[in-house]
Length: 66
Image 1 (spheres, one colour):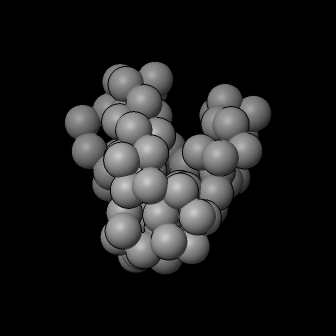
Image 2 (cartoon, one colour):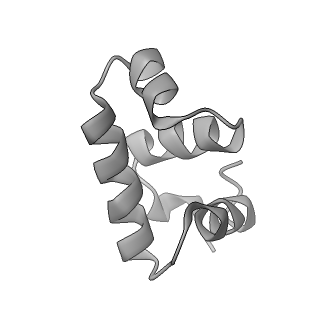
């Protein structure tokens, strides 16, 4: 898998998810709304046909994002 499948903002969010941050913490750190963080997460799950964030983090690791 290739990291180019992720947008820059998706990479930002996935890296922070890998650190164990909540959506609220990620939103504060990136100066965006919690809704936006959750939308990015939901879009990534849909893009890769995944069921949960754990699967998303596994794909991100395989792609070399985290």
